[in-house]
Structure formats: structure tokens, C-alpha cells
Image (tube, rainbow, N blue to C red; front, side, top):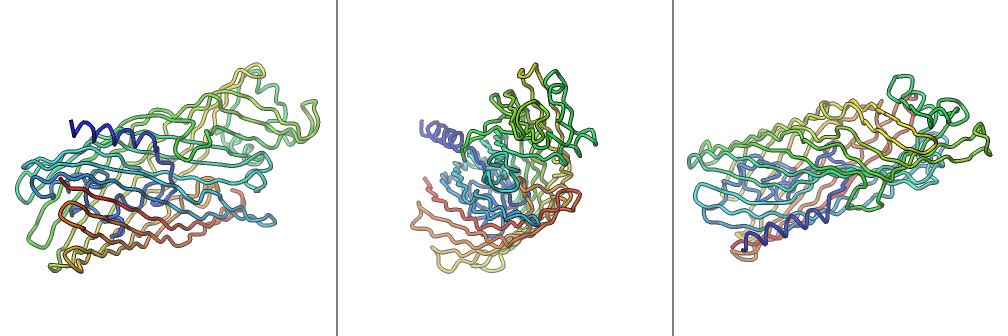
Length: 457
């Protein structure tokens, strides 16, 4: 009965807090759980609590035999994003605080460890007002993407030194989008064959690709920081291993599969066109709005390969180093969206916005020093390349962050209760799109934190 209550509680918490969060390593978190995050996100080869199911599930086998552990966590991501264009006032994103509950329960019974947990996998987002230039006068601009997991992990001690592990992940994703597109953007997509519109409604918009009808506005949002109007579910999985080479050195490796999410869809979406030239027969500036269904086609999170080691340099000092390869190129070639409506005689739109992200190399290094039997201090760094090309970066999707510098601490009140916390400082990254892609520049920095309570029983 106790296990059933834990599983139900974790599932309910996760579904109430679908994690629409901000970009860090691309759209993935810089670290999962404050123990690993306090050490720069390093997590492949040491016991880092139930967050192991989001990092390397094989490390669950490093728990003490007979231990049963419940972790309840809360994280905050606090991005600062400014978009700039020559001759225009700076556009400051109002999306400055995103909160993410998480939790997990794991039990080790002999050679077998098993459990359940809910963790945010990642996301990105911004919020601009209707007066910002990125909205082109069409209305507020808002983008939020979130992907979360309900994870069921298993780990097995093949030998006292060799562990294997894996997990089955129920994945859900949500997306909100309020996006203005000027005529040059729409013309560029049309010329490249990335924007088509068919049906009587398309024929009724004579200026759609001309100089008169020069602003389009795409709008589907539920206005919440915790859910997305367009959503879908699917599956993913992980495999991992750890091997204790000797009393000081442990190595670990993991593979996270690409997600298998269904297409995100939402009824009640809108696409508006602003007729600045009055060619539709109405006054100049008249707005024509179509109501219909939007579908985000084949939006996935990437596969990840991870390899790392943990060195117990002394009784009190541990050093951990990881490398991760994140396969963005395979999942972020295009942002593919369709829209269908019966208004104005019917219209079907198909749009692909090229993204052309590159794969990301992430290096994690962390230190944990036990100052007393109760208190452990941590520090680390997460160093990565920017996966988003300057030619396709967008003020609504500024996943351009590179490096993170982290601090953390853990305090054991007694043998049952423990608290861990981490803080991530993310220096500002600035990118500038070429003139042909808009000519704007984007500044993005962050300050993030995580706090976790652990109960052993």
C-alpha cells in the first residue's frame, strides 16, 4: 500500500506540473537533481540519489543494500533574455521565473534496485509584450516548450563491482506559441518551398505573399506556465552501466534514446493576417483571423550518449568528470507546423522553419568535499558549445547558452533526513543573426537553483 501511494503521488505531481522551462544545454537541463547539478551536472559514476533515473540509472545500484529513499525536489530557472535590433527599443523577455517540482522513490533489495520518479527533461521559452518589435504590432509574443518524464528505473548488481541499469520513460510534451512573422520572413519561407497554403481561404487572401498583407500572427496558448495548449505523449528509454575499477576509481556510461512523441496538436488555434494596404476591401490595417487546428509535426527530444568517471581522491574529496554528446542535429532540422481551418471557405497551411541545430558536446566536472560527517560542499562547471546557428536563431527560441558554473551543499540532519541544494550561474551569451536572417542580436543569461529533501526508510 505504501509503494502504491508513492507511485500515485509522484504521477499526480508530475501531471500537475508539466515542466515548461527555459533552455540550458540546448533544451535539456544542465543537471538533474541538486547533488549532480552542484557538481556541474556530472552524474555518470557515483550515487546521486533518485535523480540517477534521469542521469544514469545504473548508479542506483550504488545505493546501500536495503536502503529505501524518497526525494522531493523543487527547482527554479531564472533566465534573462534581451533581443535587440538597430533603430528599435530593446525587447526584454518577461519570462524570468520557471518552477519545476520533481521527485523519486527507489528501493535497493539485494542486487536489485527499482523505483519510480517524475522529472522535467527540459524545454525553452520567452515572453514579449505586444509593443515589442518582435511582435510587429500583432500582439504579445510567447513561446514555451516543455517535456517531462514519468520514469520507471531498474538497476542490477551483476557483480559487486559491475552494475547495469535501464528505465522506461513515459514522456509528455506541451507547447504554447504566439508568433508574429513579417512579410520578408514569409516570403523567404515561400521562396524556399517551406510555406504553402491551399484551399479557398488561401485564394481569398490576395496579398498573402505580396507587399500589402505583410504581417502574419500565429496564436495558440493556454496562458499557463505549467501546461501547453498543444500537447502529446510518448515513450523513451535509457540504458547505463557502472564499473568499480578499484577502491578509488569508478567509471560509468549511459545512453538515452530519442523520444517517440506523437504530433502535438491543439484545437482553437488562430492565424491572423494584417492587411496594411487595404487590398481586402477593408481599411488599411484590418485584421483577418482564421480559427482552426494546429499540429506540431514530429517534435522530439534527442538521443544522448554519456561517459564519465568518479575518483575518490581522499576519504573526504571526490572528483567527477563526464562527457555527453547530445544529438540535436537529428531532431532540430526544422520546426514543422501545420494549420487547418474551415473559415473563409477553408485553408490548409504547411510551414517549416529551418533550425539546423548542430550536435552539442558537454563537459561536466565536479568536486564534492565532506567537511564534516554531516556537511558536504560541492562545486563544478558545465561547459558546452551553442547548438543553434546564428543564421536560424530566433528571439522566441534562444537556446544559445554555453557554460554553467555551479555550487552546492548537502546536510544530513540524521540517518533518515537530508537536504541538498545547488545554484547555477550562467554567463551571458550574445549572438547576432546575419542581415538576411533579420539582423537582430540576442543576449541570454541565467541564474538557476534546486532544493531537495531526502527521507530514508
